[in-house]
Amino acid sequence: MPVYNKLVRDKILDIIQAKGLNYHARTLEPSELLKAIKAKMIEEASEFQEANDRQENMEELADILELIHTAISVLGVSYEELDAIRERKKIIRGGFENGIYLIDVGDQ
Image (cartoon, rainbow, N blue to C red):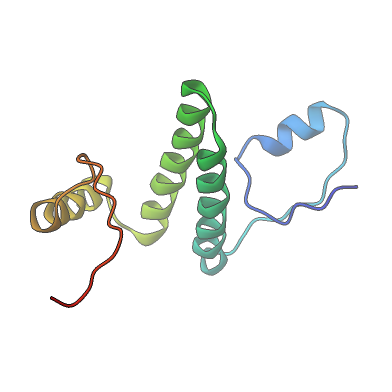
């Protein structure tokens, strides 16, 4: 029996059961959930990095976005509040649209 020990989407247990398989699972306590979301975010970011085509990229980005929505809910923050912080940071430090890749920084 494979061991996963990770956060999964809410309907995964129904899918497993529909296949006639057994599983062990539990509902995370609120104090555990944010840590699990962060771990899952790293997993999904790795899958995004490995994606090879537009559809795979979109699927992985959708998973990341779902995790963001869940994380802000756990933190008690609205998406609008998060987006306002994003906008403020973009005004102060810029976005990533120009694709600037910093190689190094040295003394003058």
